[in-house]
Length: 547
Image 1 (cartoon, one colour):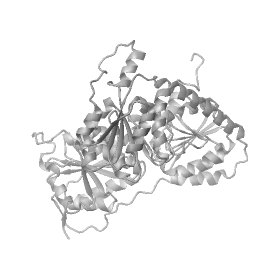
Image 2: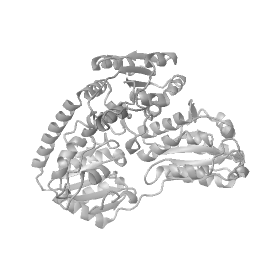
Image 3: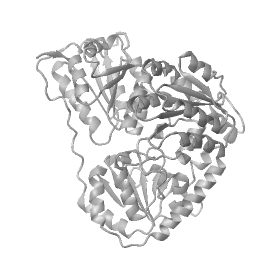
Image 4: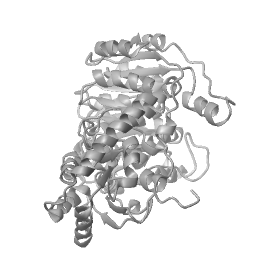
């Protein structure tokens, strides 16, 4: 049976578990959407009002599920409009497929001014993804699509791109393809000698600490077991939140981790760069670093470890547990120190940042343990890294090191669309909200049950506060004229409410969570304590005499 590249692409997406395609059609991908028409029962097009919305929705769906998701846009400005979402997917290891059309094959690189032409589009796509390839004809289509899905499932996760020139969509694939499901590549085999050395160092440690990042999200139970075995606190900053539930005594965030750092003798980094701890907090000869990561390039990036293990945590953690056996070392004193330090650090942080903690506490009180919270680059968002309790993997979504202002609403929309079985709350500031608030139309069109809280201080509040604190009050380009978000949401047909206190917010959340429809709650927001001194801490270990 013959089929077109467009038809093969549709069938490959379906075969590899993609059931929603976040998209915005256009002339260069019309043949693809024509092929999708007859299969939209299996692959539903979720069309947005801007290309960035499509890419952010795919990002949110990927982060909330841990499974590959896809978006499809036109070339040139269509692709460029997704760039911030792709860079965020790269930063957060989100398995997102960017399916991007291209101008006619004969015009690529000719500079003829074709509609949506940009120089070296494939090069742009390659720099925003972990892998990107072009389908050049019907003969190469199957191999390129298989390679893309293999990359999405193998090694370190991240975005992958496939580019299809507009004339190639209708190219003929001469033979039927029954092998549409792409296999994952096997992970690197852990070095037994390195595992044995790491096990020996860990077993001898009196004050161990585990640091987790986004790569640890699938291994919550194994890491919790390891932590209990070692009486080791588990430190998470943003991407690792939820690996160990916040109500576990050994679960800590950075204020506690910072206080414990000078006393720790072994650090076990799992699926994390260890950048903050090593580069910012510092190391010395009395601290032993063990680093396990699926990406060999990340091991030692922030500083050489005593032992580096290049492996998937799925393979390395069981071997490490077996190699350590039962430790006879009594770490009860360390466990007590962890508990006392956590209580002290959390109490101090909550007191210093009481207004933000009040709002976050209201959200936590109404959001079920399995509910998903999506942060943003806003005052309560920053404090959520420290003080918002998280009880399940993949229920705290962050932009990670990319710090993408404006990513939150559309990303949360994708999470809520992909996880309709749990409530999802997005927090945004009035500044970031207007980056993608147009996607309220998408929320209504597809009836996506997202509750969004807009903290409105009529400013890029973080920028303005830094200008006050660090530049002598020389405020510039940070005050905003923001809309009435209740009226704005209402104009889209979205349920719109306002809350002036944390107690009122709890009442509003009880009205919206579980309603099965989109909702917006506007919170008038004033000046709050500056969070950054509690987040970015000075070097505390390995200090030189002059320091």
